[in-house]
Length: 167
Ligand SMILES: Nc1ncnc2c1ncn2[C@@H]1O[C@H](COP(=O)(O)OP(=O)(O)OP(=O)(O)O)[C@@H](O)[C@H]1O
Ligand SMILES: [Mg+2]
Image (cartoon, rainbow, N blue to C red; front, side):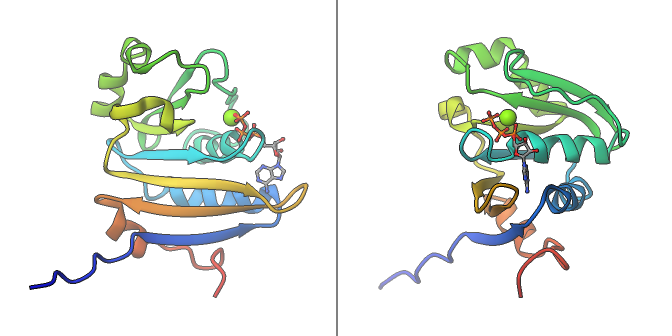
C-alpha cells in the first residue's frame, strides 16, 4: 500500500512595499502570539528581522518603546500585553550551551520568543514554530515568506492576513 503524499507545509507570502506594511504584519502577528510560541526570523543582514520584531514589541507595549537590537546582548526581554517577550539575536552565539546560560528553558516555559538567526540553536530549534524569511525586493521593500511547522501548520493556514496577502 502506498502512503498518501504528505500535505505540503503551510506557506504564505506577504509583500512589504514599505516599513509601514512590515509594521502592519507585525501587529497582525502580535495579536496571534501567546506564551510558548516561537517565531524564527531568517534573512540576510539588514533584511528586516529586527524591524519586524521592534514593530511587534511596540504593538504590545508602547508605540515609542525602546527596542534595541540584541546584536551584542544576544537577548532583550519585555513585559507586554501578551506576556513576557524574549527577543534573541543569535548571530554571535558560540553554541547551544550559551543559549542555555541565557535562560532558554525559562524563556520557552513562559514567554513569546522572537529569534533572529535561529539556526544557531542546532538541536534546540523547536519543532513547533513559525518561520518567517525576509528577503530584499528593493531598497525599502521586502518579501516575507511564512512557513508553519508542527502545530503552526494549521494556525498559519487560518491566520488572518487579509489586506496584506496578495490575492
Ligand atoms: N519594508 C521594510 N521592512 C523592514 N525593514 C525595512 C523595510 N524597508 C527598509 N527597511 C530598513 O531595513 C533595515 C532593516 O534592518 P534590521 O536591523 O531590521 O535587519 P536585520 O534583518 O535584523 O539584520 P541583522 O541580521 O543585522 O540583525 C532597517 O534600517 C529598516 O529601516
Ligand atoms: Mg537584527
